[in-house]
Picture 1 (cartoon, rainbow over the protein chains, first blue to last red):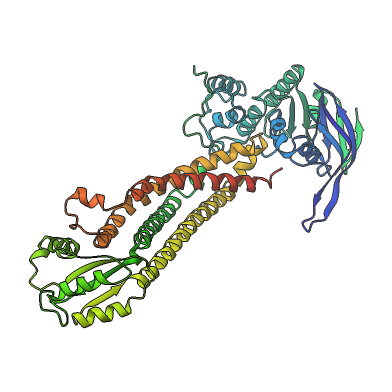
Picture 2 (picture 1 turned 135 degrees about the horizontal axis):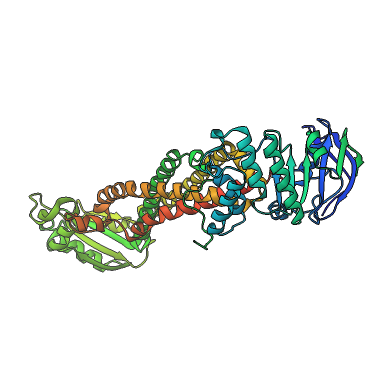
Length: 224
Length: 307
């Protein structure tokens, strides 16, 4: 499902040369339907690992396979199809400010070309589930941080992705909402979605024990 | 419940309504369309003039005999009769015919109107001469005609016709190049506007791209909008061009051939050649095609910077 094979990543330093390596020699495998915590201090490389997984960058060394595709070797035109099977909750939400909550959540389905009637039913249900049933016409600037995060979460799962990646998804949520979110992740995981959650929230990790990938200085130091 | 996959009307996920200059782009395209119409008119006009002059006009002579009824200076008969006899007897002359009063009126009608046959100034006799070939040196003939009826003007069209025909063809080529240039500028304008739109909406594009939208999906949004704006500009340009072209056609009407100047609206509209009437709806169509193709190419090229 997802496999890193001595993968390394460095960003270009601007004058054509490659910069320092932010990820070194990562090797691990996530089978279908896996759940992993992605842990590590700030700057350890969690976001870079997630960026490789949601196809925002290609590895500069080694191999990375996502959903059975070698993303280093794949043609650029083959990637959009893969991206549609991956749901991402970004730390900064990345919602479209000029669209309503409804249209933001519906966007992945519209990009995938689903029928409009089905979209309406699915999105309405999803918004109601995350507790925004009455705010579906509101635009992100009109919503609170927690509400925006819930819209972002709804958007990431609406298309029933095969792989779900979350970068600090509980940052703006209260305890009750955080628990509901973990319920959602576990339910999706049970239905076959692989889930990787990067977080600093140790309490949450303690409450929901699961195998973890721990990063330090761009290297994998522990995996359970 | 609709089961068709229809994009909801007005769904503008990239926020293009604010990004692609709603007024500047159509205005610039309209200006290009107007210039294109003028270039087309010039091209068509120059082509028909060249055709007219190239068609055997080099084999024609015009001989004007002032005071046609007076007796000839040598030989017998009136001046015009003497000149006609000389012409018909000369080698290399295929035919020589004096124009009748009616024919003369018809020639002058585009300038003088319907009353050409009642002009007070005494008109010379005009003899239309056809040569057997166009390279004959006519100066010895002209000298003999002048001896028979002093003041006779022999105008060989040959040299001038050829020069005019060449000039017309050059003008036609210039008009053609102007047309290509206008099309190129229109494409450049659309490309610049599209790039500005891409930069302005970069964040939204990156988000939509990250959600798995193909290059074609994003390019279609931009191309659709550019096509609509360019078509609107093309229609506006064509509408402005129509009265301008009609005015030019009316000015050129006397040179187009014998006949009375147009007076009724139907006659005025008929002064415009059919080719130009067809070209006018072609302008918005061409604008749409250029808008679509340019926007598609610009967006797809720009998207290559994204992973």
